[in-house]
Image (cartoon, rainbow, N blue to C red; front, side):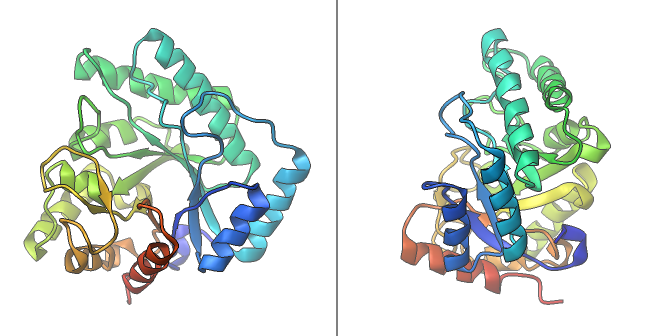
Length: 285
């Protein structure tokens, strides 16, 4: 079911250990209505083979469960990096886009990259070109590329909404998307713990990114303070953002229909508590 149909879904980043059928079983056991996965090891460049039979079984199972699924691109990918890293990143991202389309996923979430010692303007240009090349090389037609905001750690791009929006809007319209990470935004300096702060933040997202481009929300609390520029996720309601502020933010009517995915420390009890938090925080009207 697509975002525009009004149903608000929730889930966690879900392991594919044991195979794609086992991933679906995990999501079912936890009662997830949405999930995020890695389509390959997030710390390796290589993409393992996947048979047509496995792809078909997963697609049918996902449909039967009515499960919304996106993937997160590998952490090595940096389309704004130096020549060799950029070359490998574009090739790897194209492969991940292909795999996501084969599996019938809704989108591929990807970090915008890091400029290293380079100028931000040049890095943005490289990133934009890299994303476009990866999409073209993939020869896919449907899956959307969701650029994620950063916490501003090191020389990461997209720590402010204006730069993030510039990158998002550079993607071809029919493939364009964004992933909003609450912990990243908070660490980058956007304080939405008060009603006024939420209003300003939502206004800026609407202006710079566009509500129509938000494909998914990474709903995470933060271990670190607002403006710390340090990316450390915490269980929902146990971090510096806090439960009341996260519930208020996730419950805003503007987010009705946008899936929210937790990327949180492991633990089955904690997983169930986080899922309950996400379910209860869905917009009520």
